[in-house]
Length: 155
Image (tube, rainbow, N blue to C red; front, side, top):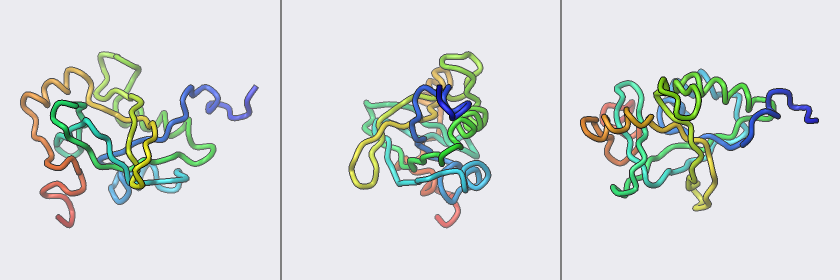
């Protein structure tokens, strides 16, 4: 029997790939992640495109376009994992895999860290119906970088 309480119930303790308002320096990072992580590293998710929400981004997987999304790979601090998982699932409107009320799906994907190594991480991607709408009518963020988009602070 483990001693981690709720943490024992989490099947895969992966870091999280964050690409929008949860990135270091962004407002949701300060609200939900600051002081609760043990590592935050620049990372990239290949095979994905970023769309403007507005106010927050949506990530859509699309290997045909050859895009990549810039972000950070964040590792929750010891004792914070289960709470952060619940908090981020709620923030991203993720109920359960494939649930019709999901705005985002939480999926495990390989991300590339700044040193070139690959690691698996949880990524919140636009749910299927929303992803189709964005691909048809959404406004793509050039370069796949939320922090570098036109209109971002300092850009």
